[in-house]
Amino acid sequence: MDLVCPLCNGFKNIEVSCMVCGENMKDGGLVSDYYDDYSPYLPISITSRTDGYPSDQCVHLFYCPECGKDKRIAIQKERV
Ligand SMILES: [Zn+2]
Ligand SMILES: [Zn+2]
Image (cartoon, rainbow, N blue to C red):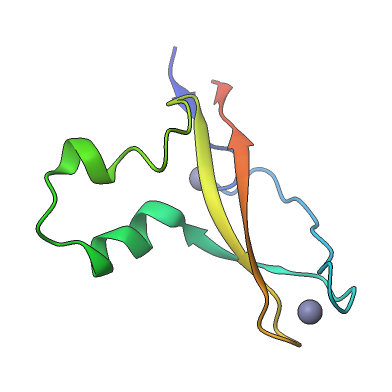
């Protein structure tokens, strides 16, 4: 059995409301994807773990298309 993120694999959607304007926020993808842009010099073992989040969670960056606010949401991975 594998632990996979239901959002990354497209079998689940979550709705997140912007705390500023109440608009539905969009899933901007994995936070670790953003880290790769900013820290190419870090080894993968560091960049694949984001800020001490447990490895059974997938951290997505949601952003608001209205006001540009963004927010990290830790998604619990599920067994398939
Ligand atoms: Zn994910
Ligand atoms: Zn907003």
